[in-house]
Every structure is written in structure tokens, then in C-alpha cells.
Image 1 (cartoon, rainbow, N blue to C red):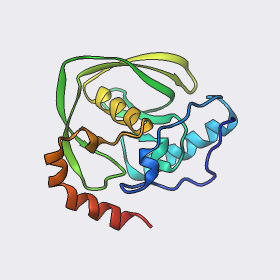
Image 2: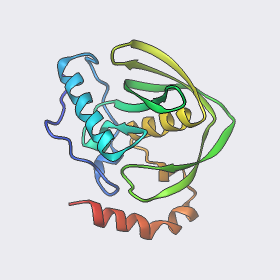
Image 3: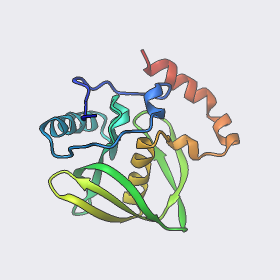
Length: 177
């Protein structure tokens, strides 16, 4: 099966089944089609002003995400990670205040590993291993979760999910066609 990408990117919000889809590996990370899709993703990420964006959030089932990497005390170097996999994570965790572009206005504390290591193909760099900690580890963990059909609220205990149920219904109603 060859890599297929949507011609137009439709942003997916909570309630859209695409957010629960486990992605398929990209066969040709540097193909013209992949590069064109990544550029369209970059535009969407800029429009929504995020630190990361997964392909499932723009209605595509390919294993690609964009992540803003630190560069001179700023998160401005956006890299495209193709077929990323977490290969190591610390037992030590921390609570991070997280938001998600697919859940506008919702910010909740999520427990994530403080450090992790990711293997991915970075467009323009090839196969790499990325060691990350703090905010970068949080963003990588969040985006790779998306590629596995996991959203950040899945990390909440059921009681806390119950407390935000009204907000989740509002997002699904307000942002979906």
C-alpha cells in the first residue's frame, strides 16, 4: 500500500473518530507527496499556534507529527517526525498543564515521563534517536499518543473525566460539522 494523503487538510476536534485511529507507517518519508503533506501540516500548525500537530488531527492516518524543538530559548524549530516510536521513558513523572489543538480551551494536568527517547525519521535528517526531557518530552509523548489513537484525556482517572464531561460535549458540539 502506498502512502496516501488528503488533498485538503480538515482539522479534527474531539468527537471526530479520526482522533481514535491508530496510524499506518509511512513507506516513503522523503517522497514528494510526503513533503507536500508535511508543508500543509506546517501551515495548519502555524494557524493554530501549537507546539505539535499529529497527522490524525488533520484527518490523515499516516504516522507523522510535527514538533517544535527548542532553539535558543524558544520553541521555534519545527521538525517533521515520520514513524516516531518511544523506545525508552523514565519512571520519574511530572504533572504538566496540557492543552490540545483538538480540544480548544481545555487545559488539564497530565502525568508524563520526565525523560524519554524517541526513534524517528526526521525529514531532511534521516533516522535519528532523540533524547528529550521536560516540555519537549511532554510534547513528543502527547503527539506520539495521537498517532496511537490516544488523546490526553485518556490519561485522566475516570472521576476527573466525569468532571470535564460537559466541556467535552461542548467542544464536540461547537467544533464538529
